[in-house]
Length: 134
Image (cartoon, rainbow, N blue to C red; front, side, top):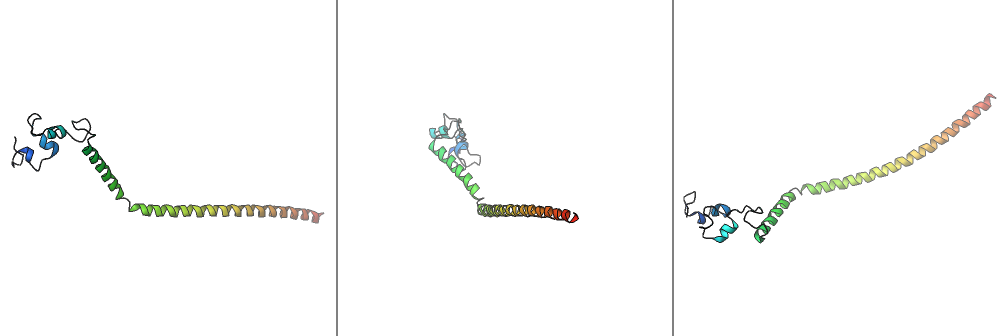
């Protein structure tokens, strides 16, 4: 059995060494724990590294990592209510703009009608001028 790098005793019992680092101190055939050599000797939580990626503990660790990623994303959520409020205000603004466009459309129609009437009046005025000349 080897001595830990800090000189505190056998490597397999050092509280500072865990998992793969602890198990690498021993050749697989000499290690007292088959569990350690089977699970940790080359296990890096990557599939195909003498460590089953479908083991329940590994699956739970993966779930935990995913939850931690979600928690990191949740830290951004204080911005979410502000964004939602902004979106609501933008929606209201679009509704108001739509109403304004409808009003403008009605106004343009009325202006067009007034222009048509004005054109008719001008035509009548021209006719009256022609009649005065005669």
